[in-house]
Length: 414
Ligand SMILES: Cc1cc2nc3c(=O)[nH]c(=O)nc-3n(C[C@H](O)[C@H](O)[C@H](O)COP(=O)(O)OP(=O)(O)OC[C@H]3O[C@@H](n4cnc5c(N)ncnc54)[C@H](O)[C@@H]3O)c2cc1C
Image (tube, rainbow, N blue to C red; front, side, top):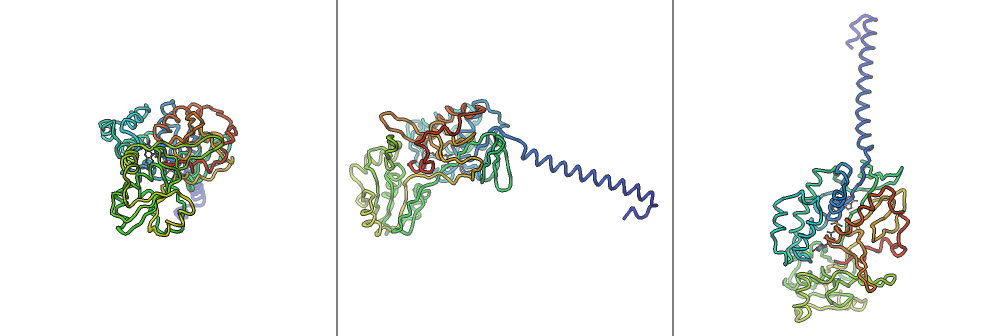
């Protein structure tokens, strides 16, 4: 419009000047947008950690201790609240002494950068007693927050992983990130067995917190507890201390202070869990074995027993193990297994934490999945150097007995 007030020549020069300015501006804007896109997409991190519960935090700590640069790690989690433990289990008695948690924190050099009140509280607890899990959740939350000030982190769930040109594209909704290696620390959720006879299920995450459980149960309730390991025993203890009519416990293996509810023969290797510990072990020894509550019935879990007892139950709680959370969609490779001694899932794709527990040889033909925090740390510190190797172990080199990838987690009993 301004151009029209000038002579043709002037107008021409003016319009050319404005046009070239416009083109320049557009080019600059385009260049800026492109370069932003390229820097977001183009940066190839050395490690992407998917899931930042205890497993992811431990993986990050182990990488830093092994010398990986802060700028080379990118984190992904929808909440950064210390995983399922942080969200639900703060009020649950730990199955190990305070000393174990203090030792666990001391195992990682990178954790020592955090000197918060929660860290001091942990160091001041009675090391010989079991405490509520909150005592370790708070320091882990501080470590998680601290790591996020040092490393790039994305709030969101990773939906897909694509292996192309020697690196992983990590999709979070529409956004895409790149990393040479990916560590899956995606965690797990409590398994439900869906016995139809009882309509009302009390979710495990609520049942394992005595306060929440107390607010759900009624004096007239007969409650079925499925499982015979640590968590099932804790829940039975809680229920026995609440005013309810009856508790019917369906177990697979007798209590002998081992979490053997899912004990299995697996290629000649007997899978065992951890022994009952802490509050659960003490209650099992002092009450359950000696003088069980009058309103508690324990039956072997069989179809006959379920037919007989489930119809009288008003509510049901499954404390029957954990299953791996849904994996991101993976393209470029077809993972069907993970190596439970190295965590290798695919090319430069690794697993850690409760979703990919280490299988430890206990000797005498017995193995167990190692699912405690110290176990994860020991595992991470042992395998991380292998994960950093440029070529790494060929991913096809996975023991045949681990091919039933989806089944592995079903054995994890807490
Ligand atoms: C009742 C109970 C008591 C326990 N007591 C003890 C104890 O006393 N001592 C001990 O050492 N251990 C104990 N444990 C075991 C230990 O707490 C667990 O093994 C551990 O918390 C598992 O951590 P994780 O990070 O592997 O999984 P999770 O805690 O499940 O964390 C996984 C994280 O990954 C995120 N995630 C999942 N999918 C994606 C995705 N696609 N993209 C991005 N993020 C994703 C989730 O949101 C979550 O934040 C206990 C466990 C339970 C259940």
